[in-house]
Length: 425
Image (cartoon, rainbow, N blue to C red; front, side, top):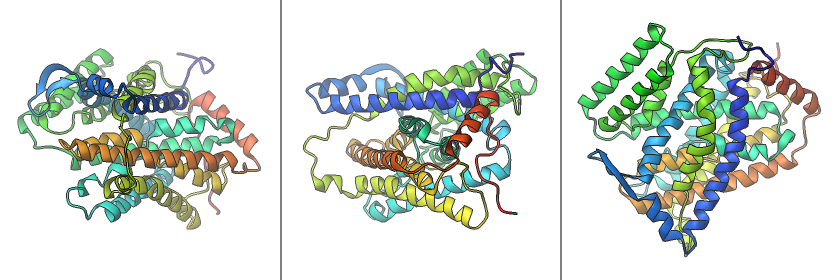
């Protein structure tokens, strides 16, 4: 077995790849915006929407570069999300109800309040109510990229809190996509998907550990889901639940665990290729000639308000109330102002918000573009204000000692057992 000194945990890889990948995502999105608003704008859109074929689904028609990225590569992104969710629930920071309490409360409030604000500003306009979930998501890569710019000024407890809230947030987003953004169901294709998933779980049950078999079945499951009317990316999360897992509490990840091996293998591809490609393909909005009336139209304003105002109110308010009423302890080594700064960063909805925006308004490119404007505005303001708050917030008196302890725990066993202060007896 690999020794503690040479093993690397999925958590350590996750924090490092999400931080670096987040900065690459920021660069990719900025490049898309520059190209879309330059003389190369027409060429940019032509490449993104170039028809490549074949026709995989009558509903989608011929495959384009944009469809391959959004419906194909993003299924791999969701596969990684599913692996992270499973690992955290079985053997990580969400393995017990005591440790799930605070991130679940924060994430639930951080999804509900933005959705309510969106409905307040945009829900009354005909045709816009289905966009309610767009500001409910948090982009962990983008947010971790901003945190990485702060270096050691950001306590480890804040990074881990952001990760756990974002993972729970992703669970909510996956459920929303499956329940509310599903087209007309093809029962035959859905039955085929269920049968393939059953085969995957049967392989797990008999102890099969070949990742090649699971990945082949994942591709078949993706295609069946594509035909079923349920969004194809959901196949990624479902497939992840069937990947065999070896629990290794308090030690580095098992080198023989298929889930750990697949998670380590996917992280760099997702962080440094798939997510930046998605950002590049979806962030290219032509803002030339935008007027104040267009910016403050119900759809973009509702999304921006939900992300910037709703996220901070929901998450910070939920954390404060949970601590105030003794439901959870304060984050270890972090001040309240720093917790508020992270709540602001959770308003960066970019990747998942763009994804849901495309599902909310299918066949309506003008509304999708308006949604992108709102997402970019809300995410950008959340990133800038959140960074400023964290950059100038005074550190906790015991910041250095606690930061070093948490970093040592991550380096040695990949699992910081408790990032909050104990509740009073």
